[in-house]
Every structure is written in C-alpha cells, then in structure tokens.
Image (cartoon, rainbow over all chains, first blue to last red; front, side, top):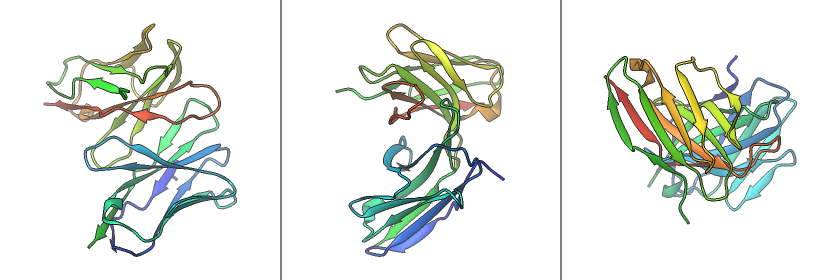
Length: 110
Length: 115
C-alpha cells in the first residue's frame, strides 16, 4: 500500500456543484495533514491544514478520519478558478518527512 | 516581500553531467526543503535543512546532495545525471524545521531536462 494515495481524476464538475476528494494514508502514526493546491506549471500552495475536529474555510471543508486513515476535502459552490490539482500531504511520525500524494485533478466546467 | 526564489528556471543537461540548483528562502526563514516532481506525480521529498544542518533525507541515491549556507540559502547538487532525473525541482522554505509543522512556501521551481 502506498504511503499516501489519491484518486488522480480528472474530476469534471459543472460550475456551482459540490465536489469531494478523499486521500488515504498508510502510517497510523502520521501527525499532520494538509491540502495543497497546484495550478498547471506552478508551485504548490497551502490550501488548508486538516484538524482532527474538522475545519472549514469559506467554501472549503477538510476532515480527518484517523480510524479509517483518510482525509477529505469538500468544495461547495465550485468556481471556474477552483480548477487545479489538489495534493494531499501527510507528515510522518518523524519530523523530517513530508509525503505528498500524486494529486487529484479537478476541472470545473462552465 | 520577495518569496522563495530559485535559479535557474530551466536547465538542459546531458546524461553523466552534474548540475547545481540554487534556492533563496523567504527572509527570516531558516529551513529549506527540496522536492523532485516528475510530470503527473506529486512532489517527492529529497532533503530538509535547518540552521545549515541536514534534518531529513528522502529515498534518493547518493548522487543527490545539498547544503545550506549561513544566509540560509541552499544548493542542491545532482551528479552523474540520468534521464530519469528530468523533473521539476522545488525548493520550499519555512520558519523552522522542528518537530512542529509550519507552513512551507514553495518557489517556482527549476525545470531540469536531461538528454
């Protein structure tokens, strides 16, 4: 099992719809979880951290399920500008290792 | 304020050559990490440096090495280049590299092509 796994997509979603991504991780001792966004041929940028209690930032909601070892990202009322690759990031039980998933491509359709 | 800067932006090398990539972190950031991103994949962790010391290393061969300078800038060196080293090399800086995660800010990357 890979350390961090994501559905590569692409997800083709009409504007205004709600879309959700999941990401699974293999190391139960993982400590920190994040979602990054990467636009085509650009560098990744932090979208949001994922907390045990779940957290929301505007149209974006992130949740963590430690028992099942997955994190999720929900995007409501999707905009054309949400089109990007979304990278799941897990920080291992050692403070020197940060693991990125392969990313999920999202295309918002007008 | 300037973000993370990397040079060069693009580079073309041939197999067997050596390459040096450079990174300047955000002012005040003391930790620099290097990642390799192959097309269609997520970034893979190569090294992290904090206060000029290596604090972490990913699963990369010894052909890859790095160092951090007193001004916190960093260089990544790759020797004996292989075709498979063709990738986007990303540098990320953060305030510190301790046990607590703090946000990493990525530079625009250096796109290396090995022919």
